[in-house]
Length: 112
Image (cartoon, rainbow, N blue to C red; front, top):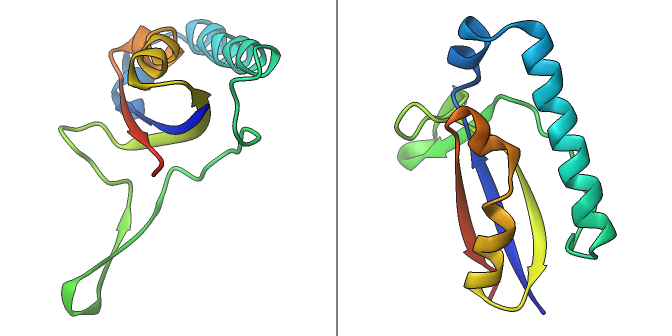
């Protein structure tokens, strides 16, 4: 098996503005169920970790930027490392991710 990082992107602020608290809780429950199913299928290459929504980026000239970093208004909201035989299998795993329920996206990269 190879290792793939799944990077989750989602505009959480927009979701919070337009979503009821019980819908958000239901969505978080989907995440927990999804992580449990990945663990049960021995798909997780590393334990699930929680990530802060903010961080720092060092740019050329030692310029440091703080905050969530956007690509098309979708900051990174988390990541996991999974086991899959190839990109197609990693895509199948990613296609069941709860981040897609609210219009988020998943970037997939294979470790080399």
